[in-house]
Image (tube, rainbow, N blue to C red; front, side, top):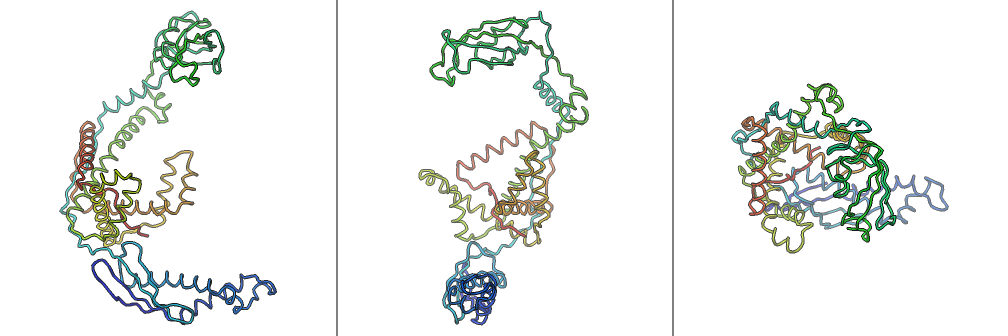
Length: 453
């Protein structure tokens, strides 16, 4: 194979490739010999079909398959040997080909721009750490306890009050007639919640166990049978049991019911949970600020085809009026994503960062563990979906690059309270929304980076 750079202008490079006919013939002979052991033709024993017979019958298809294989192999090798960073799909133009001839073709490649990385140590961003106070944890546990209602049976002669749990059977009629779904068994409602049918609860207040109560209410507007909606219905209720709420004691037993070892362990788990609820968003804010600073500190000419591809992705599901409305914004966002992705790629390559199969396996197992009962589905999803693996590799690669950047920039550690965290998140969301509305290129969005093996 002979490769020469026939043209190099701007982002476009054209390589001329010549593959000698003896190389092609060797590949053809190998393919014919391979097929000889597989082809079954009438009149010939398996594996004994002469190669000239196979060639006469399948020659064109075999030649096409071999040429296609050679094009893939030689074009990849030509690009690799010339250390070209490809932006988009290369275009191949066949000049000379045919059996008994050399294969002469060109590869038109749009290349990524060269990037002169700026020093990372000049970047300074805030890295937030949440301080969760004990009273916040106590408040969360009290809220959990409040929602973990428990009840104990009332005595037979005790009346039902608001907030009691009442258990009953009923049979309902409309204008004295039965209707589909007019009976219920072991219905449970908490008096005062008014969650069954509006006005139903208060008519059971004062009832006792084994009482028979008659309740008149209007069926709701959204009742499934439209002809009964808003009509007055009579419910004959048999009270089976009345249970009063009991105070939940926040102690070790309470903690164990929630899956903790004891109350101390529960407090620790709740503290971690509250921290994660906010920390993940704060980390995202820090990451976006890092990417913004990196983008601002570099000036790069962008390959038009990559920008166009990204714009098309952003416009994919937009209607005509939305296309015009978002034209400027999406163009800016596309440029920002491409630019950030190119810079991140360069940082990754300069530092020889890679994602290995063990890291991918560990991440899949981690995701599976976070979905109890669906571990098998998660594993099968990745086993059957190569695009998902590719996407996962890209995410892990980007995360690794971000971690490297964090180790080199100045991270100002800032400890904040929960209320301050909420304020920061709220302001960031507001700023982000305003940025979108004004079509200002503020944030890079999801980086477009190559996946490193």
